[in-house]
Length: 280
Length: 294
Image (cartoon, rainbow over all chains, first blue to last red; front, side, top):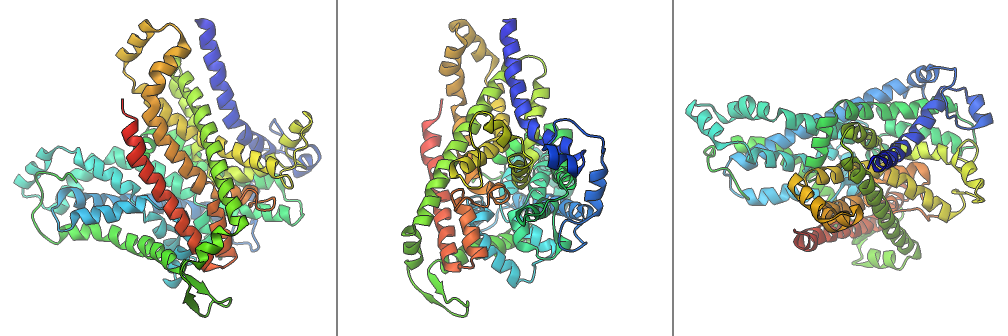
């Protein structure tokens, strides 16, 4: 029996190492000099250069101009991740509130209109979406980066399910207290939904931060580059046959991974809850 | 749709709450989706000045293009292999994590964090690890006599893309399988333990059937992932190379529509993708949900 347990742990560790290995390799190499990497390839153990490459990655630009520094792109990604998560949660909660708590004409029709967006991901309609955003003059803007991504009902569905489980007595009590619809929403439903909102925020922040296709279509000005799409520039250097500053490039890739990974690790419980609930 | 028994009475308030969502959906979902449908029946002249209705010509052109058909075949092959492997690996890990008593949450942490990595970041990371000049994988494979050349050999490139896609997808499947395993009640497990000595038989006759709904649900999630979310991974890792052999359907929509600026053809591809998603959803609702109930 003991040996079997040991075997279980061994398999789990194989999985852990399989997942960790590539990221570790990149991280370890980012603390070496570019010369070492050119001569000896990627490194398994950290080198003596410390985090110098990270400072360079944050302050220097890998694009054509000097605007898109690592720091600038990180800030853009933060705006995108937080803006997407907050926007999605606010809009979804409001829509779910109407769907669950009000009797309005065509409620069923609206329900299906909203939930049909779950069927088609942005990727299948990117080219016409790009046309729409460009006609609205929203290219190279945070609004254009964030709004089209909010047009799907994952979070709405999730809050609708949750609101249905809220006891009816709460609304009866609120009505006895002469609370109006706004007061009920702000004072009772929002506080009740705190955990749900946190779980959803974690997932949506990660999804927003990790967007790639939409930002590369939307942004031609480097001032709006996000870090996940910005790291693509490292590749164009390589494909032109030039040798990049490997350690800085690797530091940039690690920086692009770090915030969402940190959020998922720090808020593991909410992350798991949000993931399981939002995909359902 | 079930609504609350107690509700607020009529007023303009409910509309205020739902209008933002409806407006965003109308502008950024229905307008583009309908435009894709419309454009798929139109042919633009090369300068984009005028366009004319051509019926199903774009679709005919699409399905008589051997390039498109091979992209279609690759996407199906790629998404099935990615699905099978990432489900398989995740299931093994989840069963093992469920079997141990202490440290389950530590393993959960160590096996799920990769979820947070962007497919594009995973792709560019893999690009360097598989790079012939500095990467460690080609050297490793060479020592086994495998002359690994993903930039010219389409088998090598496909294997590489599949491996990285699986790496990225294992954590999601692991989370759901572990949740599924944890929800199997203790009494069922104890009864199974008494009835059935063999671990593997107990797994296949009791645990696996109970996990089937989770597995089928994940099947759809994984196919969707392989179809759509791997765009960033492919764009950074191979860009469809060599010779378009690692181009997925979504990547081709982007290549033809955005880079090639052939709106009609790209829109027809979008519509084909929409139909595929609808088919998948239909199968999920009608076939799978009914069949897998225990």
